[in-house]
Image 1 (cartoon, rainbow, N blue to C red):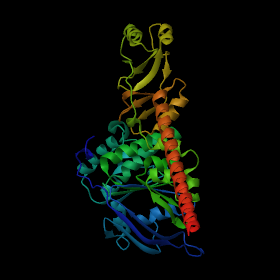
Image 2: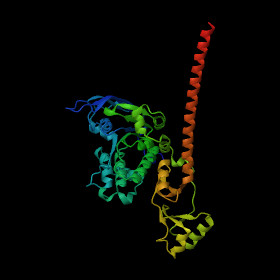
Image 3: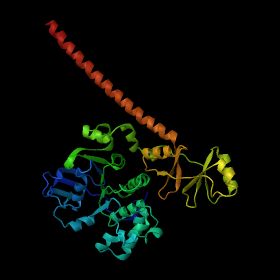
Image 4: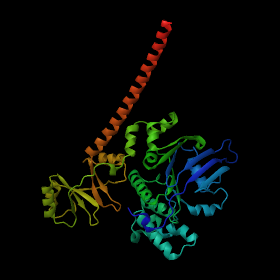
Amino acid sequence: MPENNGHDGHHGASIELENLSKQYPGSPQPAVDDVNMEIKAGEVVIFVGPSGCGKSTTLKMINRLIEPTGGRIRIGGEDVTDIDPVKLRRKVGYAIQSAGLFPHMTVAQNIALVPKMIGWSKTRITSRVEELLDLVGLDVGEFRGRYPRQLSGGQQQRVGVARALAADPPVLLMDEPFGAVDPITRDHLQDELIRLQHELHKTIVFVTHDFDEAIKLGDRIAVLREQSHIAQFDTPEAILTNPADDFVSGFVGAGAALKRLNLSRVRDVEITDYPTVTVDDPLQEIFNRLRSSGTNEILLLDKRGRPYKWLRRGDLMRARGSLARAGTLVTDTVTRDATLRDALEAVLTDNAGRVVVTGRRGEYTGVVDMETLMNSVHELLEADRLEALEAQHELEGARAERTHAEQEGEGGGMKA
């Protein structure tokens, strides 16, 4: 993957929150009470907790959209509690739910907002806008001049992320950025963020109330209770396997083994190649390819190499010289960064038991089938079973030792 698209970008900066509090006037208790946290440079940290627990307030204090009542904030070692909040916000990208784009500005103008404010030249801004649209997977020629109302929810959200990254800030704050889009788009946006982070290494602080999203995206997760008190701050694996208390267990919910499917990626399992043809291939050639492939279906790709339709033998018999009405449209795909849970859901909603894996521009790269995914599920369940057995043996061993020691003690007493 290209490093930073040749851009000499800032990588992430560390964030330290020290005794951070927020007390609103007239409220008996602080909204955020004495939060202490260290976030490493280049780390993705997720704040998750019940609604009203103060997670968004804590996030907004980092870029001082909400002024803290007490405590300190350091970014890259610099105390930002006293610097000009406008200057601070130029160093910290911010993406929110429903993108928050300005409706009267084009996509390019929305993205150019901060670079323009800090005095970048026109040519530098133009090339940065193009670079960012490419980075978030939107075609420059097609999207640069559009207005937000001409975009889907997912496209708006991509532009929102591009705008947050425009001046190349080391820190990116994201407040439920994918909360307002449909589940399939949300999965794709999450995958896109994972891919971007592989490339950019920003420090990302991300607020969500969805624990599965937290597991999928976070290097570490902060599970917050009321007033942003930290119940547990750890890796997704540690929280899934060793929740600190009942409150955290409640967040993890049932089926921790299946939730661990959120920690494995499509790229970790076998992606099989499938016979493909393109819309430009003659019908007879498609028919011959299917016959010689040994499978009962073939994947039709569009002119850009993106999955378009599944074709079966019967479809070709009925095609009568045209593929316009033949076959089944490919409705759902996953990327290599998608989790096995995403892939399993896609396979289960498609009754043929497989899902197409696509690359960065939606181009076909392979297929993952039900059998591969079920093997992974069985491996996870088996690992859990062995772990539980080991724990049980350890417990029984400890009990036996204790009983033995007690008997020894009693035996010693009798000898005396």
